[in-house]
Length: 398
Image (tube, rainbow, N blue to C red; front, side, top):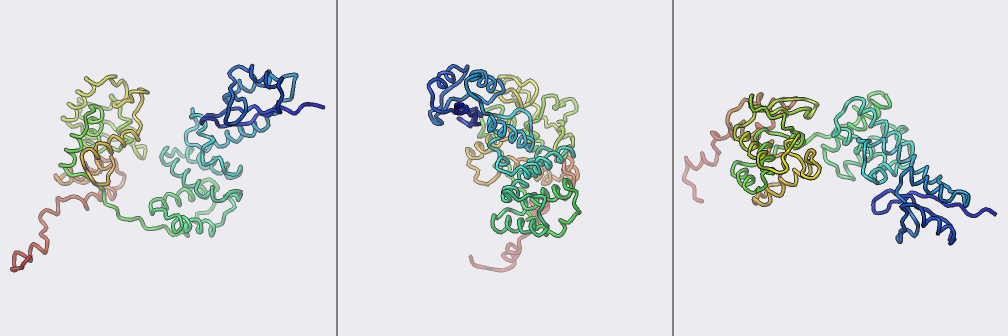
């Protein structure tokens, strides 16, 4: 009678993908497993294991060759599923260990994983930005996770409408999220499945009119004075002086600073659109002092990570702003994007034509820029409150 096989199973150990080696208790098999190069024992999982690498599988099979059958069917199923899920991610390149297995897409059925892969593939073919791909992918995932084994391509218009009502009334998603979710579903059914454009039947919620949040000049001064690190200071000065998005700050290269023409080139910005913005003489002086004194000296990107010597992570810049805001005692609920809003509003206050501000900000539509008309004080300073007018004409106690 043949001995029970050695079974290879996928295992996440300390957030790393591993091969778990399972076999019936036998001193001889245990001795063989112990001698495999690089093998380790997991007390938690009570088994020997190796990192999940092609060479690891070969090592295990050679070690037990002629002694017992090695069953790697579970491992093959795992690798096939990992390959399918990996294709649903926006970035398919080098991923950290276990990123794929920890993806929400891992729990989807095979058919719905394929639907997600098709969505991401079509978005890439149409050259959508990474940000949009991630947004559409995540919003589409919310529907797929609810469906379990039901196939998404079999849904009716009525079922999709019920899902949107559930998202808004039960989950309480915002109007902006609702628009993104509808756009993602619309893209899948119309662009991927090539169905008729029936989404006009699904009423879109009206977006709220949200005014940009900004800092006044006193708050800006306190914010900048709260920073001591020269690189961090230069980052926020750059954001405010040119009205940049955080993604544009981290992608700035030294070569983008044109001191001859006193311009900064913003390459491949939102909407895949290049633009030039003015280079402030004060900012140029700040940047020169920063580059001349900061170690290690940046080589390619204007603001390089000290650890990786690549572009700064956007999240880190956001944290720098948040820490400076708290240190400065600013209580407003604002993020680093408020520097861009402040830039635009302060230009408007000083009489700059809104069309020029639109070009500096890189807006496609002037209506986006016109939001700043509602927060600028340029046209409000000469408006007298009716209360002031009343007090000037009547004797009233207070």
